[in-house]
Image (cartoon, rainbow, N blue to C red; front, side, top):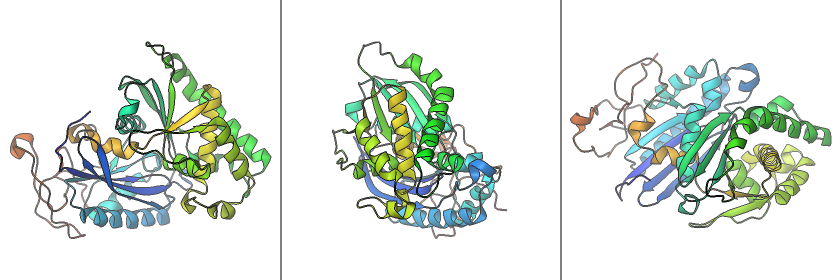
Length: 372
């Protein structure tokens, strides 16, 4: 694991297919969250069928990102990164989103690959010491893709991404409202077909531990946390693991299947923004447990965003998927220059951003997008 200054604070904004999320955390012996925010924007709506981001979705997303940049700046992090995942990287007009965010914030967006997502997921989960010594199958379910990591002893043996996500699944199957039993059969079959085509051939040969320990299935993502709340499973504290059994997940699927979207939004303890993704998440997790014969699923307190914060900046920046341009990315006020900035090639920029963030030292390896 990486060692950090006890006072170092970092921030990341994750532009996902369903929502935009902000994590600000202090980086000590453990990653300690200071602020977590999530806002639905439905950026991925229609992308996985039509291949383009909708203009209204771009506008909603840019507005939330700008708000989250300002909220992060209030907490004076040493760095702020913005990443975007499957909807933005798969859309033919994903650059429109990147440029719009730059115009609003003067900050670049990193379009990370599916393999990078898996890498960050692994490093995020490894923030939990109780998982570092065990053989793990880690999965992170997003709106457009699911990341997979096979790990043991704190080392990733395999990591990749598959095009299986909550929004993609929902749009591919177009279930009714409420979903019928026939819809549920089709949803399950689509997930199973994807697992057998894209996931099982890669994972199954790896699910044998040299230490002969039994593999533990670990899940990460907002949909899983929502599912745990519906099942009245208390989310884990530091040093603890919460678990969901296959029976508990199946029970929630049966419960959700008979409800309309409006009825799901009104369920006690369920964030309304998770009304669609929690059902799709449950179907994906259930199918994985059946396909790979897992009786229970452990919930991780950390995931993609935690991994982005703990991976060294120089590593995060290689490779970057910036659009053409040059120069440093503006940074937040109050940042501290690392030792020997000139020796590390860290640029400075005194131009204020549209949000009034007077930048000082910039992230290594960053590039600015030329304004349109």
